[in-house]
Length: 331
Ligand SMILES: Cc1ncc(COP(=O)(O)O)c(C=O)c1O
Image (cartoon, rainbow, N blue to C red; front, side, top):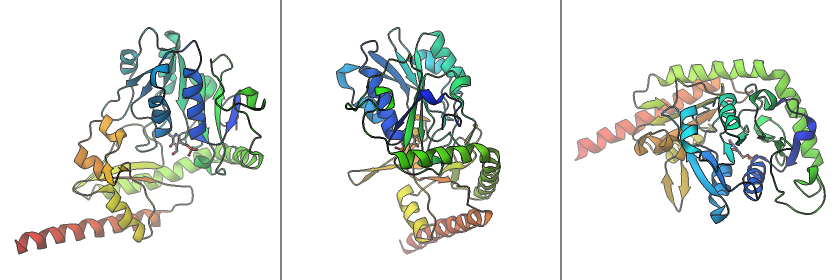
């Protein structure tokens, strides 16, 4: 696992997944007497945003803005940090849009300001080259099931100098940073999956990019569809798009009925669909963000799957158009 992200095995703290690794990082750093303020990007995964929101008075949190492509610029980072900021966290790649951040440059800015730097590489590891050492980060999150490993394993890779306090207390496991008997079968599987991901990285990326490009070329023919962050550097397997006039959840259900599993960036809270916080941070209008669908290709998807998805989307959009025409005619 350490090999996959260019780290030393001694730097790996195994956890139950990416969520726990992010919780350990946020709460563990905030619990350190040295740190009273952190800055995280607005487009982080909920497993970063929620623990940060739960810190209360123990630690102040600032949020780093992104541009319309979902990228954190060096300038935005500089603007968000204050003299007492102790840690910055910017994800390596976004789980909705696939947008890749320039972690190496951002970490350099943080280091030159004497600030610790964490990156959530849950989506990036296994899909693009990820390097704990070359990027110069002090902590990195990795999740097993995102790279075909078993559920129930993840890791926080840590520079030993990072002030971090355990959040699970008990035994001395994982360098005293995560007590409890390790989930050995899942961790062993994580290791094998990481090894395979490293070996097959280029091949998997080329395959995914071929499918992604085919999907995007097909989507161009739907005037109501917008591909988000299309010009930005993105993960080879991820596409997020919005369909004007649709609710993402409804689209998802219709596609599901047609045998297609995709996801939406919106969240259902108290029975009401909320637009994705990632798209809102990018300045996407709420109406379009509500109709967002995220497609992530796996190594076993084929071009036939892309064609099936395009056909299904066409049918759904046309059905909606003709029911709108019928409604207008009956008025
Ligand atoms: C960017 C990112 N971070 C963290 C997580 C949480 O990882 P896990 O499912 O292993 O808890 C996810 C899962 O979707 C993710 O996409």
